Image 1 (tube, helix red, strand yellow):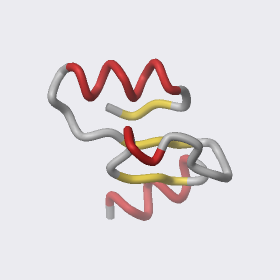
Image 2 (cartoon, helix red, strand yellow):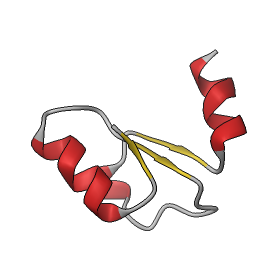
Image 3 (cartoon, helix red, strand yellow):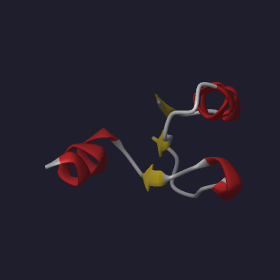
Image 4 (cartoon, one colour):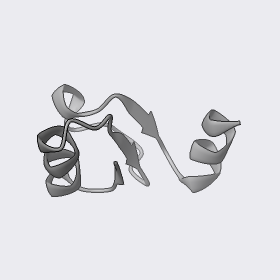
Length: 48
């Protein structure tokens, strides 16, 4: 699950999915995030 807010990450965790926080410079919810990308460009690089 890719999201930019806690509710997105909660949903991903509830579904048993890995989560990616995107479009925030810092990660305020490290317990909910598998990966953190500061923006969509960084996410694209992470995905290859």
